[in-house]
Image 1 (tube, rainbow, N blue to C red):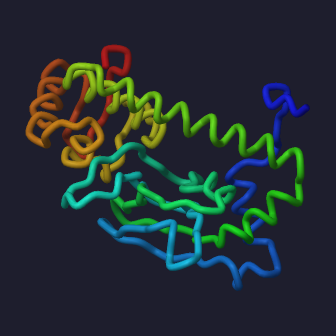
Image 2: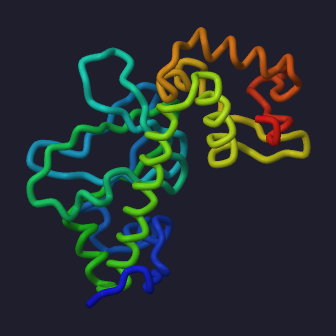
Length: 224
């Protein structure tokens, strides 16, 4: 029996990116492309399934719908991956898309090619996938918990979370990425852009955030 809790893998998403680049068949099964704000990436392309590794930029995972501004369920940044667990599905219809929130660069990888790389490491690859899927589960649990909070608290928590995970630490505080606009934050917190703007201005007035010069700066994370 395989006890996943006792296993640990040295494989990381960064390592997988390296394995792909170093593989002699890289050009056959992988490609690197640039994206601009609003670009949509789909896992399923015809009969093929693609996995995306983020090399630079910030992307939002969105639920596929007919709305012009789909809700965002997760943010992904450099060396994150979209759709990795889908390589274990024989039949699967994706309901989520990856949307570029600004200029970025991604590596598109054939799912069968990536599965072959993981299978090369046998048990260690299994531990890696368990860790990866556990992290995805934690992210979606966090997202579900947000829905039970009041609107202002949702925005506060998301500002801190995205700052810690995607922002830049400085002596003055945490600089939030420019891609995380009020409209984008509203799509993640299920609030209007206007309400996000109102909350941000209140936090600026309270000395928790600073907006001059742009972008936003978290200057008091403990109160956020």
